Image (tube, rainbow, N blue to C red; front, side, top):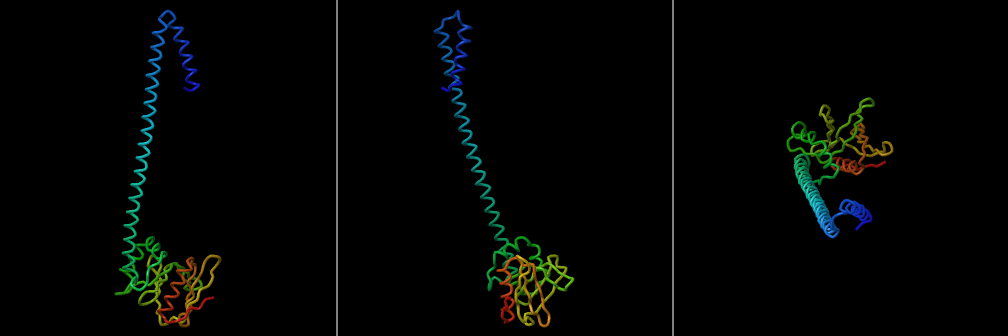
Length: 225
């Protein structure tokens, strides 16, 4: 019994004794004891019920969390299958495995890559790889979009497909990369007498992959700065 409850009982005893001073003390004490016992049992029962309720609520929360996780996993798996299906349509996966960069870009820009199939690619044409960058078409014209080496040619397109440039592999003389600021990189492609520059590239591994594939298709050697 706690100190507070002992104090309460003493106060109760005082009032009971005062109010029942002309009655049988033994009977009164038995009634008080019986009342307190029943009250303690009721409080204990309430405490146990609260404890059981807390356990049940915790079980429900765990179950709900597990269900949310299951739904999320199923959703992620379905989305992964969807993206992999799109990859198999857009990219030449028979000769090149896709990268995490490519998977994430297709996931973020599904409409753009789906439009390549319907509005851009020739029959039997597929992307070999790609990278998002800025094309310095002229000193005054810079265009953001995707540089895409395909099985047939090299393409540069903006996301809205309102701009597209096409390049032939056989005209590529060499490719080199350069630093473009603190974190950015850029690709330079010597295209005949022209020099094509693509900068604002943040993924060096993907940039290297794009450069290597362009050179392999053009049978040239990569030159690094």
